[in-house]
Image 1 (cartoon, one colour):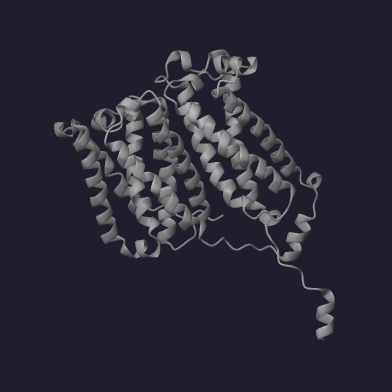
Image 2: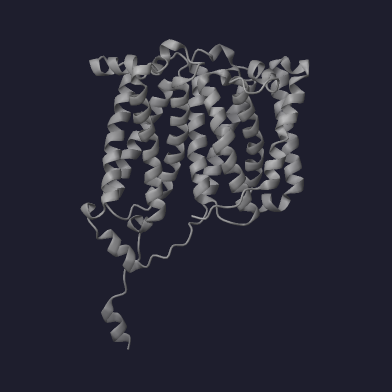
Length: 377
């Protein structure tokens, strides 16, 4: 997979969020919730007009270019919010976290901002750079799509259902518009053509003839998928208040964060239960039976989704903003860290396997009969 160059000009423009956020924070008028959301919408609108006038050719070639530029700007803002809430910066986004989206000050909100300000930011620069160079970015786009969608699936409902439901401000409705982005972007990204491969029909058929024992890497991944499916089911039962002793011990001694009234961890486990669990079962099927051409794309989507989710979940479980009674106990920290880290790494290994050795999942055309060539002679 070719890694496209980063868009240097977009990186420079996105860093303009630093002086702008500092200047806005000094204006007392923006301490009102309605003023905060109106100013945010105005800045994004002006930024879009500037991008459209300066990069009309790129937007005509791929409209997602404008999305990536705008979101690279908001990623810098999110990183500033996270650093400020952890005490590394002062006086930048106080007005927005107090009057715009106060739930960004939670442990979960802080780690969503960290992920958006680092991983998403680099993805935006890479994908925008690929569009400028007229190169493919399908794989990066699928990873971003899964990550972005997962953050919305947990964060937005969690703001409504958790203890911060009374803190909903007008800026929340601006965030709801973000839900339209992955729907439109997903259609655009999935419609892009795949990168050409050098596999011939003979090579594909030879690979697909191999049994599972002849593919030890696939056997290891299937073992992981089975274990991850059971772990997902177990944690789903835990947040559904399963009365068994195992669930009781786990939620009090290993992951008490699942009891936090902010609702983000419970929603995260339910999303895993209803979306990740079926995918693990289908992915195991695709690794056993050849020709499941859908797996490489969806493996990337779920790798991004699980990566973002686990980063936010693990970080929030140990962050100081989480009440002490809901943090991971020190004596079980190693078990918590290893189990959740393996849960996050598995989908990435699956995506890596699908990208680098895709022959098993390809639908090869039928081979030309040997007698047909002799008959034509």
